[in-house]
Image (cartoon, rainbow, N blue to C red; front, side, top):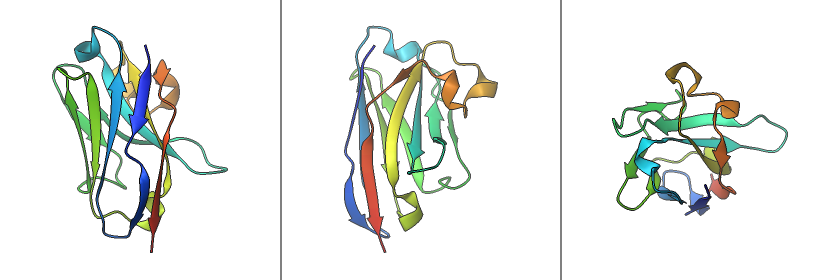
Length: 125
């Protein structure tokens, strides 16, 4: 399984950005997909996740109402639409995947088996 994240960049506060994560594999629709972010010196932080085929999504409190995670199973791609970006959203964003994620572990990085390479999002004030 390979994950390829893209879409990061430099934006101003209040702007929007859409991240994409393309996945290899024929059973993408059965995986739980997640987005995490990390800044230097800090632990990787849960951002959002969308469960396999059912499509139920979860968000961290810090992004709820501003970010939306979606998936296109036909394209093996998961997206993170980020609106009203804030300087504190600045981080490297990683997509993650797991074929057997348990709901109670959704927010835990070590629950995911597969990771993309990360894409940098910088929000200027």
